[in-house]
Image (cartoon, rainbow, N blue to C red; front, top):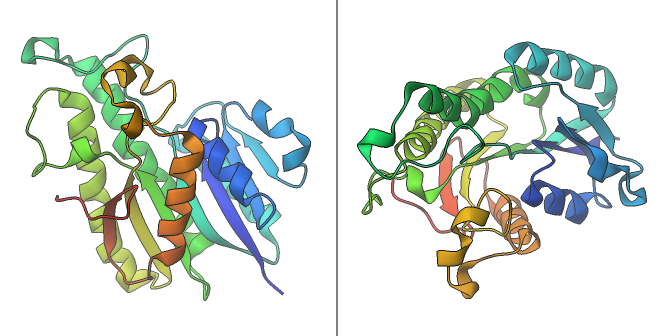
Length: 243
């Protein structure tokens, strides 16, 4: 009998924690983060916790190798790549062209576009099987070129648009190489979290979501999605977002 695995990468985000809390009693759970202290709770006593020093490709390779040795008779059925950067001590969303810098752009692009694809690159051998596997990557509506009516946020917008393009190409390739794989690019909406905190005051209360609410909606989307060899770019309601 094959055990179903759920893999959460960037597991210290608020939405990641909510996903883990909802699925931990239904599937075997592997969580990966630089900080896994949240998962020391008894609720996650059966979860496999993997700590990474960083998200360099070398660290990703090491983690995937470690996972390979632990999977045994298990199959990865769901993957959630939750990490990303909107702001930190070194960068903040640009309001005008003069705010753009090479360093912050490179950091945002690496975190939000390149690193998620590196995870996919190294996970393919583990997810290619006779069992379906659905991978969700956290994108954003601001990554939509067609939906950009406000401008600004140059680095973040570009990184999410790049992520979508990279995932689109990967979906085309995997439709040939790994027909059991489904890719989802997901916009969670504005969620109560450190990532959105500086901007939450401008969001109507009805549109500021709890991590639990977003996690529930995402799990519904994943469960209802078909393995069709295509990339789905959807919001928390399951509605398609224009590219």
